[in-house]
Length: 195
Image (cartoon, rainbow, N blue to C red):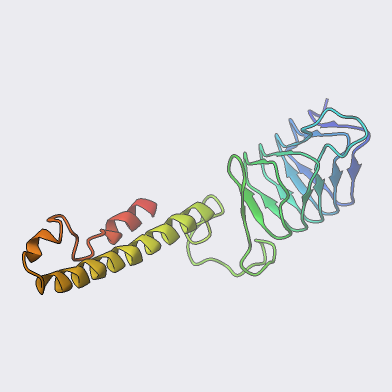
């Protein structure tokens, strides 16, 4: 009738709001804390078939689980955490963090608070994350920065070798023609690929 399947063994706290709840599934050992909001198509499911074990997730207080998200396993989603639409969460989410993607990536709130009360971002973020807080973009930017520094160091080494070799007879035989004596990485082009 309602389109919601809540196992009678599930524990549901106070002020839990199922918004447009069609297709919601809450497993037997799931626990939903006070003040949580759960949107349509959410599954709080298990990854084990063994009876008597904690197979389904525990949501702390004030957790928001967005439409279509799947939270699978016997772990805890911390207080004030947010689960993005259609995310597939298979590991614990710390309090105040946001989980997005398949499988979900954890994005920590800079202040450790829930995303609703954290410092507002100056740019529009249609999917809840920006280049500044997306962990994949952060990792790529870190690799690019490291590569730029390595490129500079290699150029300095070739310059030092060229200087040493110039004092020796037949100096041109010491350095390969393709030796990069100047850094040449196109940093702007790489950064545009990430943006």
